[in-house]
Image 1 (tube, rainbow, N blue to C red):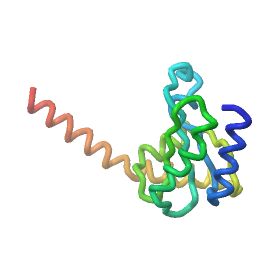
Image 2: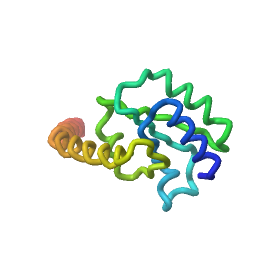
Image 3: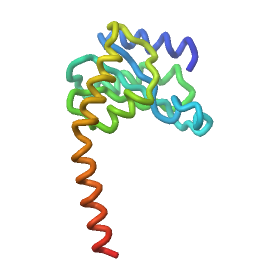
Length: 134
């Protein structure tokens, strides 16, 4: 990611009162970066954000990127696996509220651990269904 792209992301964060932005997905993973198809960016404001805001952000940032961008708004009730992926494997591009990314990572880790039993139950359920089909 170029300095100009980082600056544009910073401007979007400042304009929209976002606490931070995280670069995640294949582009953020150095091992598979060369296979990157798009740029995944997650924005966090500490509150619920209307979904249409992601389209506005996309339209504002897209002219500055040579690859397609995928904008994710981190919401209070989002998929815990996606939140976990963002918090563990993502790279913070900018942080306007001090320690907000660390707080998000901590909360996401707790939510991930709390939901582990449900994922285990779902896995066992699917395994039983597949076994019965075979």
